[in-house]
Image 1: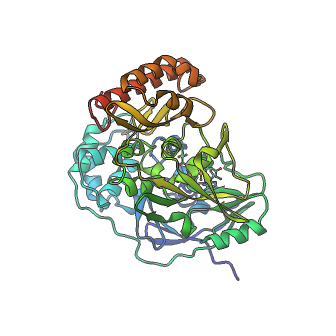
Image 2: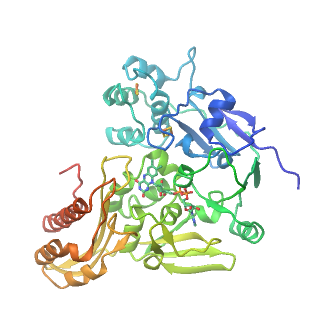
Length: 467
Ligand SMILES: Cc1cc2nc3c(=O)[nH]c(=O)nc-3n(C[C@H](O)[C@H](O)[C@H](O)COP(=O)(O)OP(=O)(O)OC[C@H]3O[C@@H](n4cnc5c(N)ncnc54)[C@H](O)[C@@H]3O)c2cc1C
Ligand code: FES
Ligand code: FES
């Protein structure tokens, strides 16, 4: 079958992607090939939000802000992208642009396009406009000179300003895209994926790219074959059952958060502090587990809930428990041709209490220094059931099962004192740029004390912001 021309809808205009000789980010393509220089580059690592654009997948109807610096052009073929130039211009500015001027919400202006994109994405969503939703919407945008109050004021002053949606132009969705030496394969279901697994050799899986694209060579020197997982329909499904929710491996962190908002509200704070909306809209739960980082935020939660993962490969499906998934620093048990196709989030027993805390250098938009997830049942102040898992204290996310065993059937206060004084026998965290081993041990002791306060005062959680 003849290959279709690669197209992207940019600000509602169909653009053919031609003469791309090497792998390139969406940001570089917008700026260097189309002179859409309103979209800025600050950090090129997903941390500052200067490169924010709005993306709408063809046909999905949902639009979301993402960081253009962390997306390869091959990932967005067939999508609709709105840049700051698509929202308004000097002669006809968008009301939010006018509000930024009125409220003095911009000084040097470098960050302003990114803030406007984040603000408009919020105004365009179904969320209520409150201080909390505005703070969350701009948590991935950094401003070094204006200060945030005028920015928040400007967003608050404009409501109900929806942007025009993609005008239903159909955009080609190629299954195979070549940019120089790089080939992207885009299966739309697991059957097509299986065919690629049989035919393509030496490939790399790519989901959201918020981890992998940090390491990419911009100008590719070697042959590169990338199998994209985000377009596989089974990997995007969310199925609700009485005792669990089953998530496809390519469900984004943001969709994961929204699906459990009311069923497991104890987990919302840590998920809302996962990167920024731009990162959560792009990063996936499968990708988070497969980076196998000791400080990934999802693994400790799944470990204390005893989650099962479904793995798919050339030979079909197999099921494994999350406890058997991690093998060493950034290593897991998956073979080169295997993916996490889905994972189960068991709904905790009503008698149990769930806590999930993260300590990081910054409150928002930062990776954990340490984290702790807890699933506990107490009766008359005696611990009857306890599962704790920690991030940032070992080479892999660590289930503290030996410690938990020793805390069982004891009075809560005695158990916590025992854990605090003996913690160094169960974890020996290393020192790195995020914190020393000593800090991590002491901070973990602090979280155990926090658990004691929450349980004895019957608090659902104790946010670091309350402290
Ligand atoms: C600015 C910034 C902030 C961040 N903040 C946080 C944070 O607060 N907490 C946190 O935990 N992480 C954070 N991260 C890390 C990252 O965003 C997450 O780990 C994210 O979930 C990775 O998912 P992805 O889909 O983008 O993975 P990708 O980059 O697409 O893939 C990562 C790896 O996993 C493999 N892979 C992906 N999906 C699958 C699958 N289904 N099966 C098999 N292999 C697969 C890929 O081949 C690749 O090796 C942050 C990253 C950035 C850049
Ligand atoms: S340039 Fe900083 S997030 Fe993209
Ligand atoms: S206005 Fe200068 S960085 Fe925000």
